Image 1 (cartoon, one colour):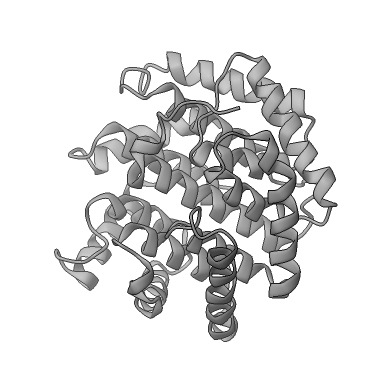
Image 2 (cartoon, rainbow, N blue to C red):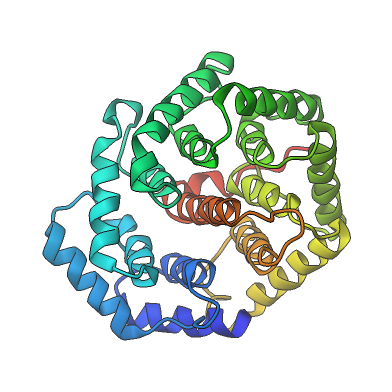
Length: 324
């Protein structure tokens, strides 16, 4: 995966020479996460073709410009029909009520989270479930709930569980974790991810906490932003905490010394986020806990959305102090 990451980074950099290095690294990871097993290095022709499709179909003044263009082009490049993917995503984006959002970014991520995991015939019902889950979350935790929680509502809606069951599971996980953290903001997103699995709330929160402790024993300090969400994804997979922590630290050290991105000025928190996401991605296939293709797709979406939000839409979150 590391060799492919380097190759993809260089290809994307050559296709988007005017962008800054974090976007190139994001694009390299997104292709590894969403591409096929048979092809782990992106073709430059695919990138250029999809960028041209985006420009031709939406024009220069589309909402999907600037920081959203590169992840969208990557998603188009891995789709069977890039034009059809773009059309479906744009239609989903346009159906989402803009009143829930202060800008384009989180609305785009929500649309991607919903569209990537829903069939066309289920889209209407999942829209209704998404809003219902979000309103429940907002009523239960009005101070903690923000526009970024709509993405999690979309993911939980796509999972197919009934709203009452999934919100009850979220609340149980949140209440177990709440006394153990000084800052509560990331716990809502973590609880959303843990609600996707079938284990008891006590078991899956315990597994998450054990993994967090194991990572801290390596000397890495987790922040309170998307790193925690990505760690929650890793915690639901069938991998021992010490082994997962070892892999995160190994990739973190590799990124720090990497001759291509080691000089880009990534913060320690950004490197931790990439290392955790790469560890989760490499352990996701053939996992004994997540045995459902739908949930594998949903977890991939969580990683895609969290990485996009973390590296591009919410850079200010990345350097917040550790909290536990």
